Amino acid sequence: MYFTIIAFLVNNLINTILLTLHNLHYILVGMNISLGFSDNKDHIQATNEAIGQAIIGLGKKRRDLAIIFTTIEFAHPLVLKITNNLLGEIPILGCSSLGIMTNKGIHKHGFAVLLISLGEQVFLNFAAVKDVNKMTPVAAGRDLGKKLLYGCKDVRRNLSLIFSDGLITDGTSLINGLQENLGKSFPLIGVSASDNFAFTKTFQYFNKEALSDSCCGLLFGGKMHFGFGIKHGWKPLGKIHHVTKSEGNIIKEIDGEPAIKLYENYFAKDALELAKELRRISIFYPIGVYLEGEKEYLLRNIISIKDDGSLVTQGDILQDSPIRLMIGTKDSCLSAAAASCEEAKKDLGAQAKFIMVFDSAARFTLLGRQYTKELDIIKAAFGEDVPLIGIYSYGEQAPLKSISYLGRAYFHNQSMNILAFGGQ
Image 1: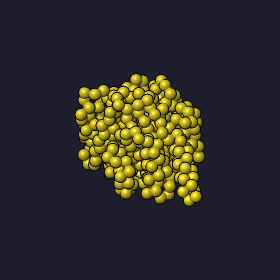
Image 2: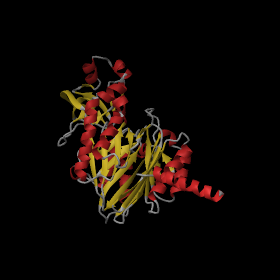
Image 3: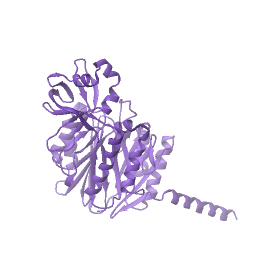
Image 4: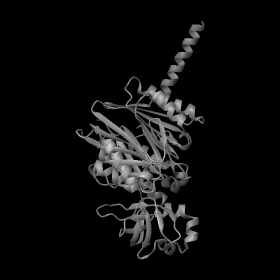
């Protein structure tokens, strides 16, 4: 009798697990993926739960790669140790974020893992660079690009995926360094890690390490099919201005005057008043950089105002660049999210089997209580059951357009990036 009861309970438990894991395991014609997520308040239990789900979902398929996204409280050496112990000796990459996006919702606390079994005709290489600001971002980019290409020169390469520290002051130089080795028009798509708007420390995950001031990445090659879309939705205001003096990510003069005058004249406030509400102003009214040959302006958030009236931006602005003040609204933000999805679908040309989302933290702030509407738009575009994982970032790296996946990659602020994978 006791054995019968135990068998009954075990059978029920197995059925419950199978039901729970339904839709966690997906096949991309040769490539298998499995998603795991937990919002357990105990970060050790959450790590075990999420990885356990992903392992069971993948079944007996070979584990080739794990991508993990966590909220900031999971950036702990013990979490990485547990992850490595459970998954074994496979590449583990990812980063921290203020929120995690999955099919089930947007989570302000949690651990998400994407476990991948690559197809026979897909290969990858992975690498990381540390102390980016010490070695200079452009040198770090060159080094990472060189490491990613090592051993891959005779194989067709088709996508690089990059995770970097969101507090690196010169993200543009990092990209430029990468492109020196990967190629100016090679599809480079990436995301800058975030914290809980403290802007103190973000984390990048590379195998057993939780790093800061670093950048890690993946280089995919072989037979892989994907589509990409990027939009921001901010619109230009007023006339065109020109950056008459700049240095890296510091705009010193606009139209021959201290850069802050652009905002002082528009808002009829002095620098001290503007500084008090800088975060709101930067999100709603960033600077848009006109780039010849591109349809959209490249956005730059204002990080701080210097005593001499210079504007420190998140990303560089070249001297002599034409710029305009930009404005964003909730409606324009949501319209851009829909356009980004449609762009990715058009590029893919087939039903998406899996989606990655890199969404600016600024959009999260602008949308306020409507922040879940972006997820609703993505699911409406691709389907409720298409597996999805994403994060909110302090910067995005991608081309401004996705035609044939070509075009120089830029460092973006406030954009919505959709990376959709199809079958091989």
